[in-house]
Image (cartoon, rainbow, N blue to C red; front, side, top):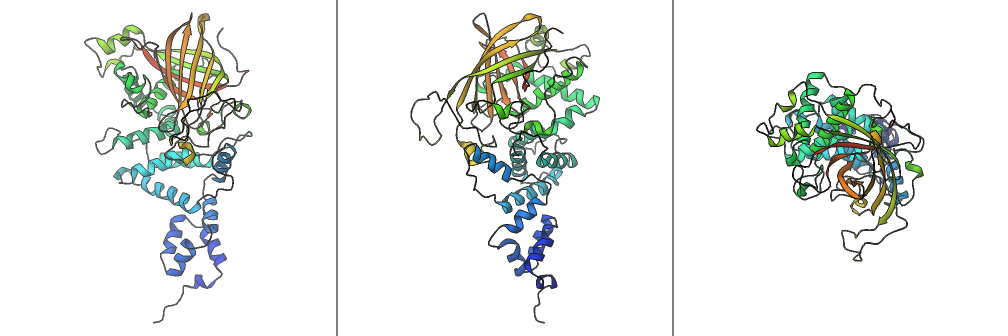
Length: 460
């Protein structure tokens, strides 16, 4: 019998494309497998008209917003086109893998990497705030398939996959895991986080005395970050209505670029949005408890924090910061061999901080921002602050600063920006003694930017 075309292929290609646009991408792929003509229509067109319209019909942000922001920031050119087919295929593939997460599919690391890139590549926040469709889609996907509920200690999870899942949790998952968790499960998660954060063995030169991997790489340790977020939000919950209007933002959109207050009015030199007014929560154990947990006969006892009488202290600190200097750094290619120099101006960063997951431009170094300011706590305690912001080797944003009393550095802090540059979510990290001596205490902090007229609580 002679081969005949399917009746649908007798209609104009434009109408067929229109019907495909209204279909799920997986159904479009199935249609392309029916015959050569269908495959050519889907995969061999001279333009990406079909793929662009198919992408824009999905619950995703328009990626041209991120491309345009990158171009305006000195990254890729404004005329650079989006590879609509590749971007849609990447998302659909990641979704299909995540749907099978309980079986631990072999492509899991690549899928998690794609989801992280989507989170960090969400369009920058415009001056008139909106909501990111990408972040809502990620939240729904990870919640529906319980991405963050599986046992992280399972032997079949590689260290890379564990770090990736904890990074994605930092952007998307902690709201369900911490804010909306039940009491018993949250208590165990909280105590496990305490065991990690208050373990003084996790602070050494190899991990910069902060939330970084202990391999001298300078890469973020997302387990450490996850534990910090858990501790601080649990402690804030214990405060009840105290300082209730002063909390780190919890919306998904808080991780987007330029979502922090004043981000669109910042000094052009200040790509990280350092200058302005900040709030910081600092948590710590009674030193006798900290010493007992680390150095007594009960050291590192897994039940140490199960005592109902155990408590941490939480302090609110108010900061005012200003940029003092911006220093260029040499590019990885070695094109600039000159010593670092101060720069009066600098381009803002590209739209995504993940060099390995977002854009080639993110591989280029950012200038190092040096800053100074004041820090005020309760009981009239005031110190000077001096620090810097720079990119990590894995393309994240690292904050480092010291608290100075009477001309001497007393405390040092190491933190990581949560999400993209100038994100409202701010910076989480750890503080410890400035001289890193044996027996120095350590604890978690969360730093985020507020409006300059944000109410002060120092006298309350």
